[in-house]
Length: 310
Image 1: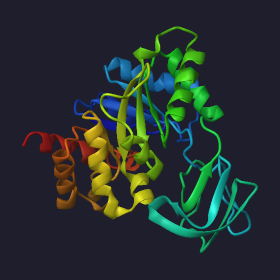
Image 2: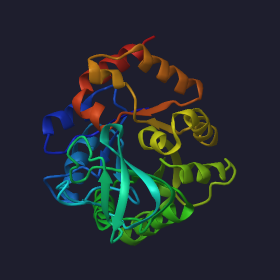
Image 3: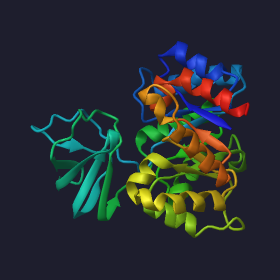
């Protein structure tokens, strides 16, 4: 399975071109992206095309992922998060492009002060990662997540991805929301939930699983969300982490940091070696990141078509 991440739905030409492309097997909408429309209208527009072209549509919920809630006016103001956090200092904060800063202070649980300052503007909706000896993120599904769950169910969508899954309680919270918002319209077994594994606690959660013990009513799959996962565990631990996820779930999805050579112009030998390595671990399903999908879609699918013909 080859999965593309959709652009904001107001980019209707690119949206349709992605969904209709014969090399794309499924599509994913990232609810962390800003939309010009309500959650329901956003989902409806994507789903009309997905149904037309018979493509599965996944709604990617943010859950406990840390994201910026407003444009940061640095250095005059703090970086404000969507969840309250308790952090044991010293700690580091990673921004887009692997930019790293020291975390100096956390005020009121949501306001970060860092040094040196980030190299690029820190915008609303941007994901951030905090690396510390101790980190507690308070809360789970956000109000916006619930709005997207309701919209998806209203549109008959049964596939969800959940960011930063670290325990069965994260999964149960989503299942309870599906049951509550669905009001019995479908049994829970009709739904598929993809656990995005993006942190060290997430790996510990996977380690405790076996193929014979994955309880629950919905269909579960794992995803190696390599971008954030590599920040949290480090490059040297990635091989073992990726092998573990593939061992536990033969249908696991490999996501992010794919075909990154396109950012410099074309797919590189390193990209091909990466794909071959992931396939050697028995990954058969791949998902392009938001950036590669949005900015290099034509190059990605052209390469994939050639790669699959080998």
